[in-house]
Image 1 (cartoon, rainbow, N blue to C red):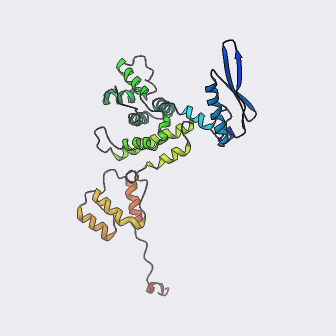
Image 2: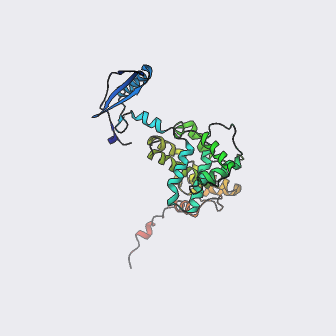
Image 3: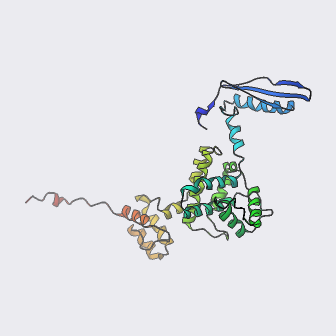
Length: 312
């Protein structure tokens, strides 16, 4: 929803009472820009409540949508009730035609990891292995989701997952979003997940949130706020961030400890400012080259005698 699709030119009129044989009805009338709108209710209380909401939004200076005639917040709230399960299926369908088979599997695995963190409760929850298998192989598989040969057990699992996922709008709550982000960094047994896997899942989550903005399910500012979830460890393991020259000795000291280099490597990194010889698992050659390139000392200036040497 762009600013060109909204307006502040709004006027709300008095509620109209309609006398009919079946009983009275009450119509709320208002104008948005040059177009008139009306909504009819069976009781006066419902009409007054709806009219009060329209008036409150107008007095607060909130923009109204030209297409629906409703306040922008009301439109977004109604769209945000789409469940995460339905949205994840739509996201998988959007990506499906343009990606390779391996990427489809990666998307399905990431969406499964996110979906199990978006459940409202665990009452009647199927087994973890069966649930993840059903989501990965059937729910987030565009070619098999509507397969009539799907087993009844899988259908029951998918029906439970669809009925017990939070709406997409729940990700507006920082607590819910943080719980999802933290859950992507651990395995089922609680042990830390591989940094590359956690980073890949987080990237797919952010791509899904951007798609939610495109569908007007979330606000753009909320997604940008969620983009600050990248941890330093994941950034370094992926080779996307390099330390500045001033912080090199302390940083290499940490690397040496992580690489199990022992006290000798720590002492060497602390005293000489050179990177350790042993690297932690997961460090790409690009990361190593980046650190080594920034570790090279600047060239020494020419000596005074060399400057004054006569040309032959």
